[in-house]
Image (cartoon, rainbow, N blue to C red; front, side, top):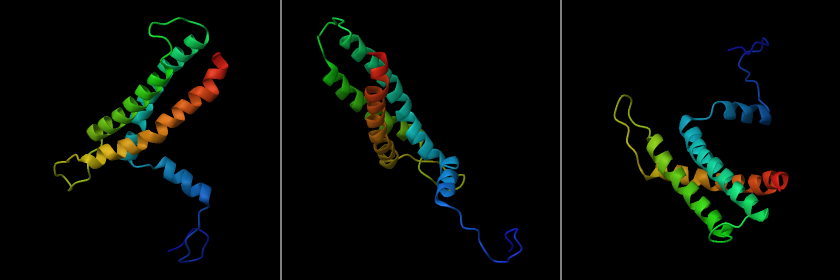
Length: 135
C-alpha cells in the first residue's frame, strides 16, 4: 500500500483539527437529527421569549405581570421534552439489514441529553448577545 509519496505501508497522520473537521462533516444521521430537532424548537421558543423579555424591559404592561422566570422554566421543559419526543420518533435503533427498525427509550435519551446543552446555549446567546442589541 502506498500513500502517494512512494513509501509503502505508511499511513499519513492527520492533525487534530483535520480529524475534528472530518468528524463534523461526516456526522452520523441520528446524531444530526438528535441535535437539530431540539435546536429548531429552542430557536423558535427562544425568539418568543426574547420578544417577551424585550417588551417587559421597555415598560410594556402585560397581563399577569412579569413571568420571565416561569417562561424560562417552560422553555427548558418544552425544549427537553421536544428533544426527547422528536428524537424518539425520527431516530430508530440500528437493526438487521432489511429488517424492521424499532424504537426504544435510548432514542429518547439521546434527544434529551442532546437538548440540555442546546437549551442552555440558546438562552445564553439570547440573553448575552441578542438582548443587549435590542434593548
